[in-house]
Amino acid sequence: MTDVQTKTDTETSAEEPGRQTSSTRRVVLLGAGAAGATAVLAACGTSSSTNSNGSEFTNEPGPAGSAAAPGGSNDGGSGSNGGSGGATLAAVGDVPEGGGVIQGDYVITQPTAGQFKAFSKVCTHAGCDVNKIDGGQISCPCHNSKFSIETGEPTSGPASKALPETKVKVDGDNIVAA
Image (tube, rainbow, N blue to C red):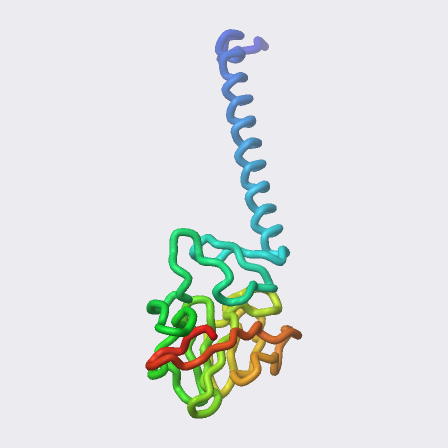
């Protein structure tokens, strides 16, 4: 029997470099994907994170009013600076008695009539933003930590530190940093 050759030596050698190129591309793309996945996983374990606006925060935020956001004002994200007080955090009428609101970087609560408190909205457990105030509790969606609206102390969940408090006062119709 005779051996039938369907491709010439020139055709065979012309195909091999193409195979090397696609293998090299595949290796490069897989390596890039693995590097990206590693970066994402590594970011989950750090103590500083990035807010949705691109600025970094840590589990130990600085006092309110200590620095303005890049390119922005230092008003806590709602309103403008009031007369004799600091940055306006919320309107008195927006904060329900026995509850609170989340505005800017703060959770502003009214545990009892006329008593206002402000806490960092960054959970002290893993740096997630709290997202709900209900039944006298401030809740974090990431690991279900709950905090008191009166003291900011954790009432359940993995968080063991209180939400940092910012002193506030009423200035007219606004709650402002004291």
